[in-house]
Image (cartoon, rainbow, N blue to C red; front, top):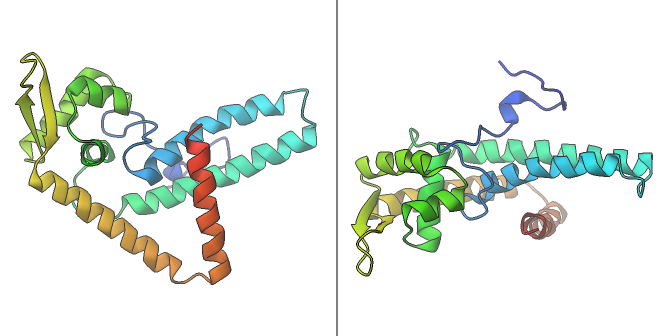
Length: 199
């Protein structure tokens, strides 16, 4: 059952807890999920603006309302995108690791933990699960035997490619129902969202 939280959004649409299974900010993995989690952090700025003497109460109220509406819409879109995946049993955090390796190449365990902003033990559990499933490999570093490099297997890369294909296909279908003006608006919005996420 969906419940309503204090800020007026549906609890079912809020981002999952920031654990190894559902990673935080994610500026390098699944774009929709990473942006949704990033936008949640923007709400703290809205609170700051509401108490800032530099802004009128009317302006700060409008800003907070617009930020809340945008946050909820982004969460709902991210939730719909998360439903389209190649492996139903794979968690968002596990897919984020595969996506990061696909986009940026091999990482050590510590580098992955830093990228996803989780503890090394949490990342180790995620990596162990992916390794057992045959999606990643661990290889000793040639120049430093104390380091172990983690990289995708062909199976892991196939999961990323198929998941991205399914999510793009769903978005293409959704876009096909929009008129030219609506699609142009979304294209411009995508540029602005990338700019906001990079700050």
